[in-house]
Image (cartoon, rainbow over the protein chains, first blue to last red):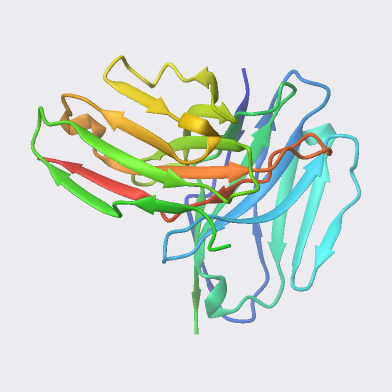
Length: 114
Length: 116
């Protein structure tokens, strides 16, 4: 069975703080893909990043960075110098071999206060 | 291209009525998905089409639910004899056939169903 766990339900930070959103996944597939999506208050989910299971390099995109560690089955997401516009629900997701069903975690709601 | 369009955005119905949602995917995308999202939860997979073929249905999809994608373009999701437990946001997403083997989903804004 495949599962994605986002243990943090809500996080509240003050603008300019760094924040890390945790994601732990379970799968028996050797080939799989991990994703992060953002759901702003307007409601539409937006793709942020995709990683495959063979690429454990960390990735940085502007203020966003992702840390993928197969040893701990984690794919954590860090926002550096958070801004109010980062306020949203963030979902971690997993797609296994056979690849059409994406499994989402329950999401972490991030509040960034000015 | 305006992205994935869903209609209606909101639907309020009485228990026992039938409802139908429509999704227009991005035209170049041949994969189309329906997900359901309830409050405080992530999207749950319902069904998937590749072109006009429905290749997978979740066990969440009872026999009151049916989805179609005639001619591989738009899709409809029908719920018959609605129940209060069907109240949720119904999300449509599409993706291209990606040589990298993973589906980057483009979501619509969703159709919110409230069953009274």
